Image: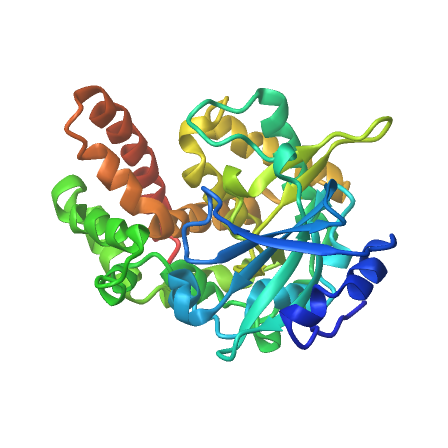
Length: 364
């Protein structure tokens, strides 16, 4: 299991000699300029790095710090967990189907910030927008997800909280009303939307669903306690399309780009699957049921054995309840849309998720 040591500073990381050693090619000059990315919604800062002015050798630096990142605050991340994944060698051990694109990491700023140096793979990322991805792309992503889980099957210690990684409780509490309340005076739009969405819960769901969701939003430990016997692997926790891309190699299988490992943890496969279904629902080319079936088939193929039906169903129902704790708020906002067609579509989406809330609650 490889491990790495953080470079002492971003300046040290971006020295020509350092970059030459990291990339395996001579570097005479380094050009750095700031830029913004549409899918960065938590407060991180970005730099574009050109080596000898060559766009083909472009890199990106992501600068993260607790003081300017609401999601790091929401998850109690004071060490930069996406850099921790590099330090502990987790990126090195991901399966060949996945490319985390992180080259090296450094300390950054006086407040415990970190900087991640990554290859610039922007041309390979899923384009922003509302258009559905293709059936083939969806299948590639599910296959890569299964490959990640199978690679770390029964190795959840690789992303254990004792090493500094996020806990399941923090994962399921990150998008709670508490986050909205704490960040209410900040400049970030997402925490405000979280608060606004959850305020609609009493209006848009039945008392049975509300009685389940409201206590778990404040304290998800009953859910994580119920899930604990099923914890079997390492999960990424943020398979949104904005973090995904596909690199197509000549004469080799496609490789999935997977960014933003700040919420990687020890958990059930349903955690990743549930988030993928919830956050990407508008762009999925097949039904959510087909996604679930497709992912299970990929996982069974990677493990070369069938999954126990009772185990699978239990962790799935609990995980989808957990996915609603994370992303129920945009479903509620959608169902309250003033546009009748949008509201009808999102009402059906909300109903699908609340049916799984009830199923999961029966296992608490």
